[in-house]
Length: 103
Image (cartoon, rainbow, N blue to C red; front, side, top):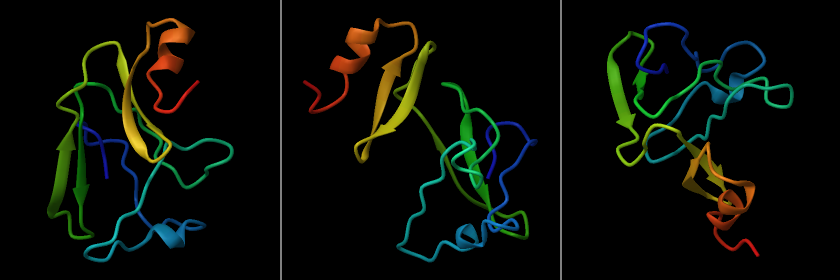
């Protein structure tokens, strides 16, 4: 898996992350950015104009997705089971107000 560029790539099932090796038909797997708490995440950024591309082990294109509703200065965040577009230049209050069920 990669963004619109050829490098870097995320390789499913790397040592220590074998649980991310296979996605069976009709199954899903959520992959998040790599950090100190998530060593099995991807290392590249995904901007508003990128396309995420998934290849099989033979480099055949399997799927791709582009965030059609995103815009410059925004980010897509996975919060409470859904993806939400959040402005990266908004006030803290407006970001919190954009989160479903926040009070």
